[in-house]
Each structure stands twice: as structure tokens, then as C-alpha cells.
Length: 80
View 1 (tube, one colour):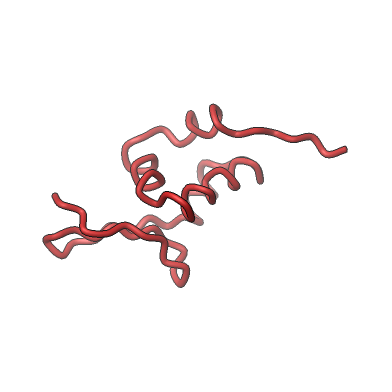
View 2 (view 1 turned 90 degrees about the vertical axis):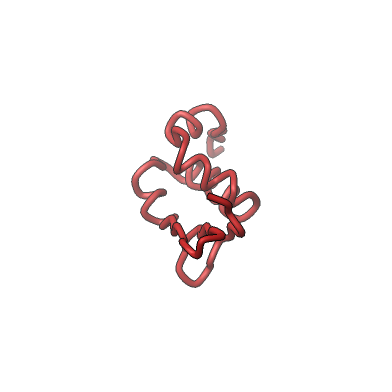
């Protein structure tokens, strides 16, 4: 299937993938964060992808392992 667009829809809080045949996949980012992010640092990592690289976010959620990704990329900064 040929994807024609992928963008974050602020009104629905979903990353939406649209395809040439007219079909669409909508990823509820709030539901994903509630399921896979355990803290504000992990949520921040997911938010970065949502706003800056929605295609990578969609690929991670649909084809990857979000928990393993978050374990590898999240920096935890202690509060002083």
C-alpha cells in the first residue's frame, strides 16, 4: 500500500496515515502513551517523535517495540 501522508492531528491527538487507496490508519497517541510510557521522560521521547517525525513514530508503534525503544533512548535526569 502506498502511503500518501502521515501527520499529527492536534484536534484528535492522533497520528494519521493516509494511503493512495483512500484508507487511513489513526494512532491514538494518548492511548499509546498510557500503555507504554511509565514516566514523564518516556512520554517526552514519544512526544518528540509525534511532533518531529510522525512517520518514525507510526513505524515504531505499528512495526517496532516501543518499550525496548524507550528503554534505549530515554535519559533520566535526577532532580536536584
